[in-house]
Image 1 (tube, helix red, strand yellow):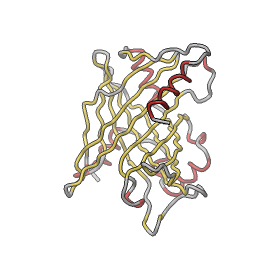
Image 2: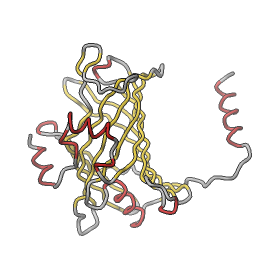
Image 3: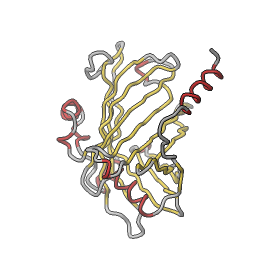
Image 4: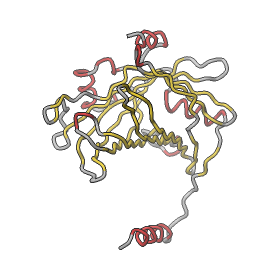
Length: 265
């Protein structure tokens, strides 16, 4: 069967009976949707934890190579008088064995390190219906300041808000090399009326080079995340990994001063 016929078949199946679903319509941000985005992403001042699980696949054959487990923990710092939101974050993602789920420290004789950001400092501003984002990360000569970026879109599926952020990454990393990858973040914020215990959710995908220890080639990472508002609510596997391997990542940076200190290291 040709690709064209498969596409026609798939579209035909989608068109078959059943109740009509709400249409996801892109729209501009207003103060309410901007605040819902900021509150979802960084909370209200106390730490929040985006717990993450997923899989690393080789591309294009689709072989599942590793599992991943991690956390992106954030704290909302005081807003500016003009409404600019400040987010202090740090995140770490561990590679796990695809079969046993054990933490990987080596693979084919090569050391395995988690993906780890000791901090990320992010600001969000609402400007004429658009969210403008700036990001700071890295230390010393590797310090990066990225922005302004205006890539966050808002859609509504019924009463659910969907915030999407595609990232097209292409920057030098020394020795004539470049870091090139595509990432996409889809945040889902479900209303209180849905009665969900975990209303803040994320689906994330990345296409780019495999991690160096996995050898040459391209890979796909797909992760799903949900937010919990208490460290104790993280699964025991995550807490054990943090406490034994990465205690710094048990909480987000406490202040902008802590971030500035980390930037000098």
